[in-house]
Image 1 (spheres, helix red, strand yellow):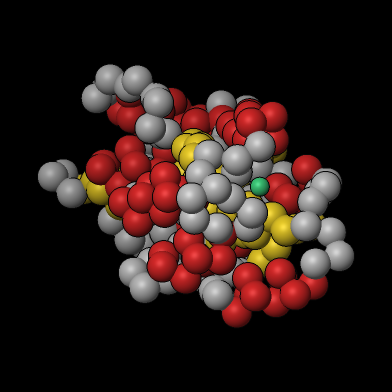
Image 2: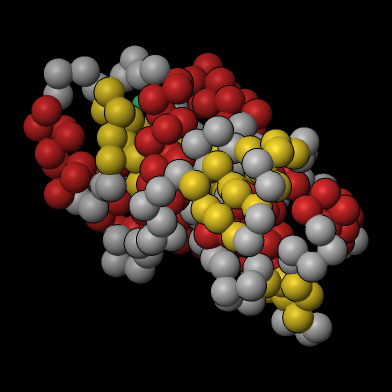
Length: 216
Ligand code: CA
């Protein structure tokens, strides 16, 4: 899952980006509204964390313009006691909000919920044959036994599981699993796929030659 964080306070931007990456997300960052809108319009992010008070273009206006072309789930960061700000944000097309200063655990849970809902998934648990993906705990079980996956391996499994039945192209996987600063070699995705197959079974991920990958 690839996220965009738009926040002009350097410390908060850095700590949010770090925390989200530690959760296994690919994260891009923007520190003003214009840069944020430009990235949000050009990439298919899985969710955007958007501060409302931003230089150059505020969060409400960014959202209003973004909604002309994209439905990307947006979580607003709003000021305490500013209920009018929250109403304005929700009316402009935000999907949810947290109030600053927010609890990190709550923000992470809300991001997970946004991504889940955007995929039409109501439960935290996705079951595919003997494999269960727990998107709240971010872990994978096979026959009830928890498996040890790296953050990237988990992200790969979760993305395919949320799009199960559909063929996901390699380009799409690159766009959703790696951030703009990641320096990746073209075969790295194959390494992750290969490792997931070793852990979850060779037939867990189907290769569709010339098209991409699929969970049946
Ligand atoms: Ca701000």
